[in-house]
Image (tube, rainbow, N blue to C red; front, side, top):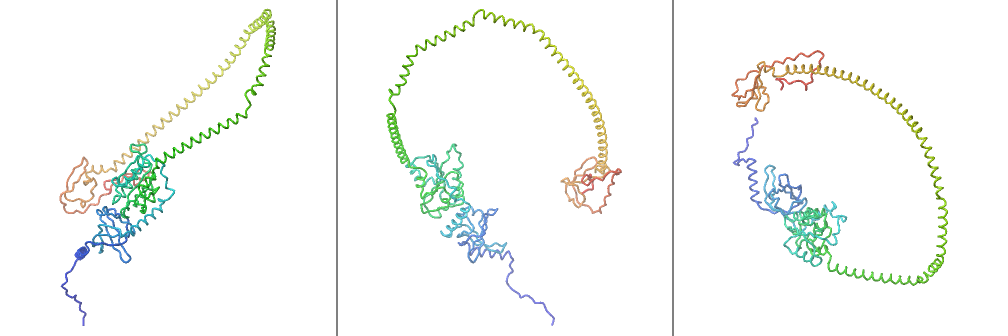
Length: 538
């Protein structure tokens, strides 16, 4: 028997479109799971998207759930998403029709117990330690007696009162308080900003720059102290150029800023004790050192006085020391009268001998000899002057003849140079005239070529150029619509027109190719980039 087509069974079920089915599923899921708490580990988190929304997944050992945090909710989250962090997500389940998938829209995040917080802190601690932020060589000892102490804490809590009271008891110092919130969402950002703010102060400025910084907070739960374990706070403490003392919580409380600080105090009161010494102890120690110094000086003076006395006993007496000089003085006193008489006699004898040498007759004869020598020299002087003058005149005559020869040679050289310069100037004038003639010829040829190739010549023969509103040439009627503004350029000017309805299509007449101007013989063809564009170029 012949094959017959199978008929589809008749059904009363209504047909669903994909959009209708997706919308129904969305409403059903949102009605059934409008508020849920889901516990899982954050996976695939790469930070907020450029739109401000955050996309990641929650997973456990057997399943995976897509999650989204909208931009407005992300800024209000108390717990920021981090890769691998175990959290409890509070929100609603919805579907995404574009992918046929379901997801949770998160409205709030909580830590999944203390174990999740400790795991997160341990992972952050290991990562920051690998960067060297906790290295011992980075830490510095605070100054022994700082002039200014900066305190980062809440201005209304008991911590600041304990620190001020302890500083007043030990050694009063100038204290600057940077008020911050010590718990809550903005705690970490405010603490890191305070540390960087103290470091930004200029030494010697209107606000004194602290010599040491104390970051303090009272005790609290692990969640309350999380602000001091944020990465921004740890990095600010590690980058601080001012020595920093961490005093967060009680002795058993541990935060990540404790590892980056230069010193860690078990309590805020202990931080104040680490910052300054006890003034009374210093005064007592100074007094004790002063007493020891005075006693040592007195003992040294007594010892030197005894040594001087012992040395004095070893020295001879003044009578013994002066006995021999006194005896020599007595002997010299006895010999002095006789020595004076002998000395006077010797000087008298020398004076008598000198007197005989300066008798008048001796002086007269010496004067006569010198006058005779002067007369002889005076007689020889005219002849010497004449001979000297003649010699100098001969030398001047020779020098004059040599200078005349040199001057004549210089004049000859100037004449020859002037002749050469005149010849060069004449050649330069001829070259300039020849170059001007050649350039004028080339300019005339280029002007004629430009006139022959310009589209202005085509306009002069009765043609026109049509341009659209942008100034671009219109090559065909298909590119013009009714109402378009056009610009028509004629030989003697331009006219602005508006296109009306199109008439019947007319077969386009192929344009007649432009006649190429005659190319002079021997001239090289123009390159494409140097050719003048024509009216028919696209």
